Amino acid sequence: MKINKLVRQCAIVVIVFWSASAISLAQQAMPKLQMAELTKKLQLTEQQQKQIAPLVAERDKKAEALETDKSMGKLQKLKQAMQLQTDFRNGAAKYLNADQVKKLDALQAERRAKLTKGKA
Image (cartoon, rainbow, N blue to C red):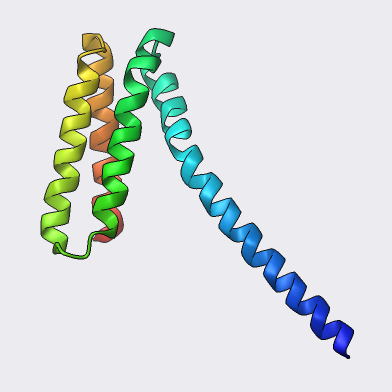
């Protein structure tokens, strides 16, 4: 009986550790996934990828800080999140051609629509 209890406790510890590791890896991989999506959908060149990657990382860092900030209300957070997206779009637009900017605007509009639908 004691062996079964010990095995269960070890299994729980392993599962908790593995889950925490998986979450951490997923958070680290998120900017890479977003860059992959942007690269594919906007057909970014290698140079554009290098220029836009820091903007994605900065936006994600600020979004994460905003999400964990308990001093603001939901409306204030929403306004700031929208501003983050606008800032990202304006920063990225410096490195994109006109067609890519239109595609980025469409991607952002699509995401806003999905978020709005999900909350309605």
